[in-house]
Length: 573
Image (cartoon, rainbow, N blue to C red; front, side, top):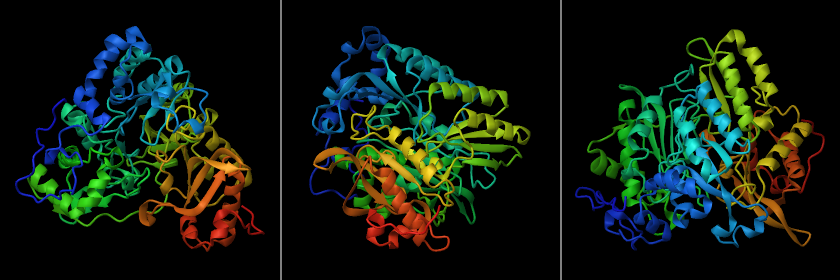
């Protein structure tokens, strides 16, 4: 990968917008690395680090690891150093990365929308128990994420994963990150098209391939054939969304340029029809545009969304068709956006008469032990398997109707409810300061405590209100598209800096897709969060019109009701 500029030439047929200054775009000849990340990738392919982990670092220990591998190339193998204990949020931006490093790793395992057998779920659980101090989180990219991983144990973990058909390849890094696939692909009664084969083909052809392992930054993929758009397609770099052409039948529209973090943008819809067997080719074309034309000079502008915003969707399509696919795409009106839940929680009928069951950990936090118990239940009740979801949930596929109530009861006993409260169902949280070197505040435990308190205060909440808790501005928990999005930061309270949050209100995807409303200079302390949310939810319940969703109410509500400065009386939950 020291030289991946084989397509890096100005196209002969398409007038491609050229920025006024060099942005490190390979296609315009800017091949010299312009920052340390690009230099590191040029010095050595990140894919080569796998052998060094297997044959050198795992045998010689943490101290033997080259810093360029440790804080760079390891990410292509799904490994980040985790935050050392004892550093509060005020140290996050003050200390160098190496000062925050612990001698343990976070590890992400890809699922890519695949159906996990009981053996695969058991393998994931035993890894947590044996190697990760019983940690295991379900992330919003359909990963299992561990902590406390020792470099010495990585080869044994990889061996166990590979035996179960799983891996950590390119789960992090400037690479094709883990794919989001519909948790109910191939079984939902209302599915437009099953995209499982396309995701499998993309993974087979491109994951671990050196031609697609050096992007300007991360490249996030989502694909669904379900009408609920259950993979958050608005917020991914590339999304394939089920659609129906009046002549050709079911296929996929192509959306590009979504992403959140500090410059949130919703994906732009291309308005095309792509058949199932051409999805991988379209993915390759978009990924290649990002590789060749993506901005490599500044990391803050290195996501595909900036290129799409600068070019516009029409020009992007033109370049894709003319220079990468070599053919025109079939135009088709983009599918309508849905309203409502996308998480598949609860018991639902499948196409074949069996059932699928969506279950909810609280804020994605489970354990290796719980995964082992889940594997036992999957095997005992003859369930086909499990899929992870983009909302930190789990869906069990292929449950016989005769056993579903017994299974649901047993799941509840291990903390995986199929009938959770609205609060538990609709709260997500990123890793937070417990393990993440970028985080400023605690998230997982704070979210779990928040859910418990809100369940007491609003035990019969009759409408979904999503709460997304993030430990920093990077929006790993999709802060800006939640009803109540909480972005961690330090805030002043009685003359001292304490953990707190900037509040985003009324964000949404689907039909009402928009970014949450930020109130000027409005911050909430972590300690005061329960009371603040209680106040605004009480105000919503008192002031809403019949059937009015929280996000709709926020858009019209008076600011004093949203700040929590005023409490409307006479409301019960």
